[in-house]
Amino acid sequence: MSSADTDFIDLKVLSRELLLDSTDVGPKRTTSLHARRTPLAEPAAQFRALNAVDLSGGPTGTGAFDADLAASGWPALTPAPLEIFQINVGKLCNMTCRHCHVDSGPDRTEENMHRDAVDACLAAIDQIMAAPDSALHTVDLTGGAPELNPHFEYLVDECVARGLHVIDRCNLTILLVRRYQHLPEWFAERGVEVACSLPHYRKLGTDAQRGDGTYEKSIKALHRLNEAGYGQGDPKRVLTLVTNPVGAFLAGNQASLEDEWKAALAKNHDVTFDRLFALNNMPMSRYLEWLLEKDMTEAYLERLVNAFNPATIDGLMCRNTISVSWDGRMFDCDFNQQLEMDAAIPFTHIADFNLDAWQARQIRTARHCYGCTAGSGSSCGGATA
Ligand code: SF4
Ligand code: SF4
Image (cartoon, rainbow, N blue to C red; front, side, top):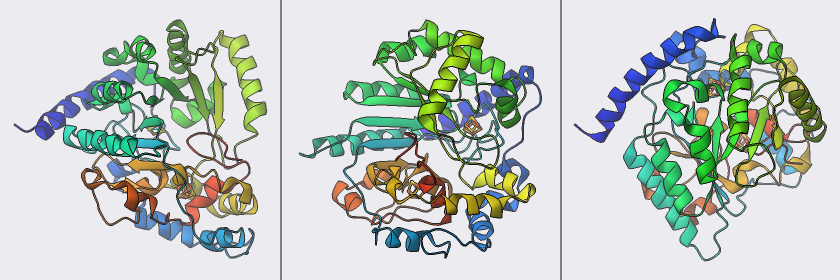
């Protein structure tokens, strides 16, 4: 039996456990597009929906992202030094949130990174770190719920051993699932930063987006992280919260939201955290489905285009990040990954990675990119301007 077969069988068992485990959090907010076999599950259908909108506004009034970049002094979007190696280890998740841009859920057992691709990522990391002017400092692990990948702990340990900062993009509720309850202390021992998604510090907004019962579970998980030493100013135990608007509007001002969140969570739940990232929702996948259902796609895109801010371009995450998918393909960012816009490079698998070719590429863009350049900008690291 190959390691790939073993992964597959384990994940089927795990998926059943997750479905059982989720019965105590009440009704789910939705199911994956993939499970429902809706046309919008395909990136081509998402591009059609976005491109069908008649957009004005922005620097050129054309709704063409490349044209607006060029008008802002960026005739081509080119890479900056590579600082962040982001791996999307799979689409399997214990939740099925309404806004998910990955279309994750307990049904996504087949899209999970196998050990050979994990090792190919580590070899690429070694190649990048060996470059004389290497700027790589962080490995950013995302999903799905990245903790569900059978090689997650191996991957974290290998990255920590290389002296890299590791970020786990955590949905909080996974820390209450039996198999994963040890993780707060396990992360603390290794200095892993935990970046936790929480739509709002109030119950209503969080449960509306993530499913009934999510809020209570999230607060419980935050208490566990606090008990493990997270969220108290220790640079080895950084607890970041990541919020995105519950609705069709832009993320608010990150700095003032952070103050508001810190005060509210401390007062209401005695929870502390270190920093807040406020992200825009990207008009794709299940969030795009929601916009289409509410007939708000045009209004939301207009809002993004009208808020186009050239000052955000320099700090776009596609410039300093490589995004690798569960099957070892490479993308300019996690959003392009979910839309299957492979990076413009002359190789297709991370096992063939070449740093010079990666740095020489031109970044691929389309209308969804307005989500990153609106207002103060939006990236996995929060605001960009
Ligand atoms: S927790 Fe994250 S990955 Fe999982 S369904 Fe929700 S948004 Fe998607
Ligand atoms: S979606 Fe954002 S990060 Fe990705 S290529 Fe477009 S602008 Fe860059």
